[in-house]
Image 1 (cartoon, helix red, strand yellow):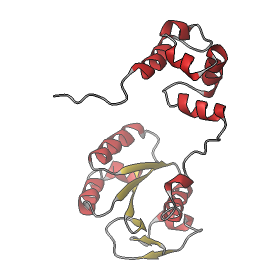
Image 2 (cartoon, rainbow, N blue to C red; image 1 turned 90 degrees about the vertical axis):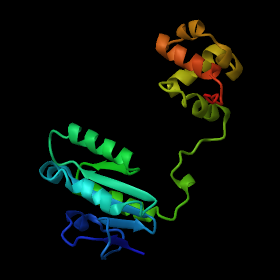
Image 3 (cartoon, rainbow, N blue to C red; image 1 turned 120 degrees about the vertical axis):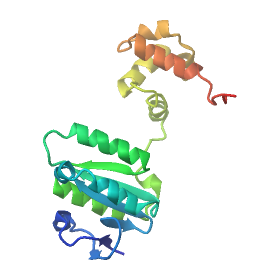
Image 4 (tube, rainbow, N blue to C red; image 1 turned 180 degrees about the vertical axis):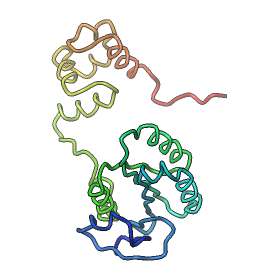
Length: 199
């Protein structure tokens, strides 16, 4: 099955080269799967017609499980527009993808289509089975802990148990650890895994 396209004049078409596409009368700009669609928006156009995307999202409704807004950044002062559109999409359960060129927009559409029937583990990070790789994967889940920090921790404490039991005061003595990082790591190990429901 091909990517289904609404408008013949869409500039992205010239950059969809690796997969088939066809025209059809659809509500979104692109349909990249049975349950996935893409709305395409140039920020230059959005600046001139800010009401356009609101109307398009309203027309789309809840027809697709995965709804993507592909934003083409073609204006220099773009942060306020991207912030506004991000809020709009969060309120409407739409995923935002930002592209910085027409070519990049075309690659995104090709990728969405080519991964339509692929399992999620295909794009998940591969973690080796050795001890250090598993430890690194485990500890880097904590915000601001990087691979160098993992090496520092295992060198100083020797075991996961000793890292988990280390106090913030002890962690601060490790190279690369300030108060904030030490407190964040220590509190992560002391918080309950299941939050208590508020009554």
